[in-house]
Image (cartoon, rainbow, N blue to C red; front, side, top):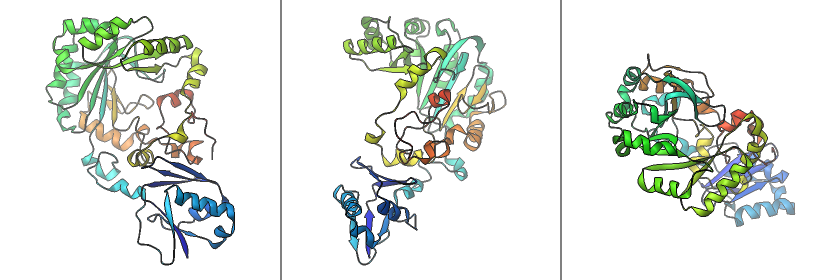
Length: 392
């Protein structure tokens, strides 16, 4: 009896008429469409094996035989005959390797879960209209007393990596230092990042000297920002990221010109509006999925959770708690603390678990687990396949 044994580093994805092999070590991808080979690869009876029995007719048809030989030559596996080899664990079994791992948390493992990212709007309003988290002009301000109650058990959030602070017109917000002090007093080992206009940073730091000691800045610049100004900010203040909003083709040209004359990382941020939807959609099309480089962990996570949202929490200036800005509120900081809110989101959030297996047309595509997770832009455009890959 002939059989094919795939290496443990090979991820297998089955479509209706095709099978995809992806080697996470070599980063090679092999898309198989031969009917006989696909039949045998889909006939695996035990999902706990990487062993596939090969029918005798495969070796009588040259095209099918060549495909099997390619699998071996390209180091996706090896061909054997005789007694079936010992059990080979399939890649997806590693998903439960350790219940303490932050990669996957199942419903029964809440005790091991901790929030990863917290985003807070302390003045203005959070908005998902533009496919990214922005602030709009509003006089709403987060109630410090409510937030202090909500945040009192934050020291239990052992996996918390980042706290994002958003606000409209920070330079006029007098309570920023007090708000930061509430967070600092919890002795959390995480990044504290203020999202603001680059021009506000010198004023903020002049008014609140402690900000430089505790915070980093996520600074928004534009085509009018000079190279000297950006360089001086980068050298003087703790800048985490420079962001360049993209709304028009002119913005793209300005962004490209800026990159040519400055040696500082600047991230483009597409902003979706009614008048530019078609242009932005063109810029977001993914062309290189077939040449993607994913790790085991990334692929396995894509089969269970949405990495863009999982472990994240948003708090509006009204105190409302969200898993993402595309879901309804799960409560308010007036009557929940951070531990209770995290538990609630872990059980009930839809966006945390929104994966491509659950949406059309992605659910029928063999490349779905190699794709980036579903993003805010796909919510805005109401389409889940911002790619040029055919729907297999």
